Each structure stands twice: as structure tokens, then as C-alpha cells.
Image (cartoon, rainbow, N blue to C red):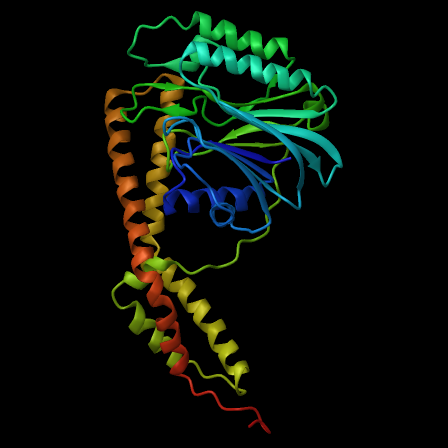
Length: 376
């Protein structure tokens, strides 16, 4: 079973929605657990948009005083909902995996920062575990707790985490939960100034779950739209087929793109009539746009990938304890540039979306369409 857990810091933005849809699509996710939704209510339409599909079931916990909101979603062709339990800091969804015909419970966790609420949550989760002995179980999310001192670095407040560590480890051990291996960065949360970091997001599973998926690992994703890293829990790497070619909305803002497209379209000589001619010309246009994107426009994607990779490299240095002050400052600068680039592309998409239809209509009208022989 492939599960995505992510403290998204608000589901209201289009950029975060696109990021989440990409992970869900790329990983083939079957269940998604989001923390800190920052909304009072959720609709079917919103969940369909977040997933990119309308065959989605969901449960939302509003939280208290604007914080602590959680959203659990699942694809109805992969997971059949049966019942649920919900309370402060958790959403437990019981159901059956279609592919394996197994009953399981997936618990979305978002622990509070204060010790008292955390202890109460550990008790609630222990009750869920004890009442689900014959059910495959997975608990994932933002536990706001660490298992050892090396899982938190750079904290400026002089707090003794001994009690927190002892309580969290006791909860895990008493319930016979397993902390699956982690792949990628050691830390899952980074402060904006890069000084503080910790591993407070994770996935815990029951022994039955691990026996079913012994190769299960937590894959920590790149930071892009939140100060937390999304985590993908899966037991194997998919063998992906070649990706289809897609257009980029930002092309429309590139000077000369419209004229180039129209010139190319008019230059194609295709035989046949009606939609056969349109099909052949679109095939030629697709080929030329791929070439143009690589040679002329490709810099925008190259820059974005380079910046994100540089941030990722510095994150790894930070996790290894070898990051210099210059590297920390550079990461802050790169994060700022990355945010501005993403915001710019988001505004561009919003501004140009309404123009796409009219532009494509103009291109199509430049080719004369004759009716097929015998047509009216």
C-alpha cells in the first residue's frame, strides 16, 4: 500500500494543490494523510481537486482555534471505507484493501506541541491499537516528538527533551509498533532560517503490516511548498513508463511564442482532408514545440530544478552536520528565489488560463477544413 503523509501548512493555495497532485500521480498513492489544513470545512470538489480524481473518499477534522486540522483521503478503487474514529490529533480510518482483500486501519496523526496533550493522544492511539488486534495498522503524520536527541538540532530554547523522548518511545514499544527505515534526508522539518531542524514526521506500522510489506520504507521528499517534507510510504519502486509530453502554461508569456506557433502551423503540408489533416499538423506541432522548449524555453525548468537540487544538497549537508554559515545563508537565499519563481509561475498560469482556448482556436482556424466527400 502506498501512503503519502504531509504537513502541508494549509490546503488553500493552487501551488500546494499542484504539488500534492504531482506526488499522488507520480507515486500512485492509494491513501493520503494531510496535517494542518487551516480550513474550517472541506467539500467533495476540493478533495477531487487535491487528488486529481473524483473517485475519492475523505474525512476532515477541523481542529481547534484555527489549528490542528487534518484531512484523510483515499482512492475508492484501492481502499473500501468501513468506519472511522476521530478526535483531537487523529483520524483513524478502517477499511479493506481491494487488491489484497485485507482489513486495515490508517491513522492520520497530528500531535500538539505541549506534553499534556501528547500524553493524552498516545493513550487514545494505544486504545485504537489494542482494539484492532487483527487489523493491519499504519500510523503516520506529524507526531511533534522525537525518539532520540540527534533527531532534533539547532533548537534555541533550552528544553530538556528527556521526558518527551521517553514517553514517545514507550508508546511505540508498548504497542509493538515499528519505525520503518527512512530513505533520503534525516530530518523532515526545517526552520525558515535553517538553524533548527528535526525529525517529527514519520510512519509507524504494526508487525502484521511489516510482515505483509517487509520492504516498506519511508521516502522523504524534497522541501518545496512547506517547511515540512512530504513522506511516501511504499514497499517497492515502481517501474515507470515513459512520461507523455505536456504543454507548459508559461509558454504563453514568452515573447514570440504565438507568432512562432502560428508560423509553424501554417508551414505544415499535410494530405487528406478534415480531421486527418488536423491530426497530422498537430503531430508536427508537437514535435517542433518539444524542440523549441528544449532549445529556447527550457531554461525556466532548468533553473527551477537546479535551485531545488541545490537546496536538497545543502539539506543533506545540514543533516550530516557539515553545513557552514555561508551554506546556510545561501540556502535561505535559494529558498527565497524558489518561492518567488513558484509564485510567479502560479500568477502566470492564472492570468493566462483563460487565453489558452482562444489561442488554440486561432491556430486551428488558420487551417481550412473541408468536409469529407459526400458530406453536407
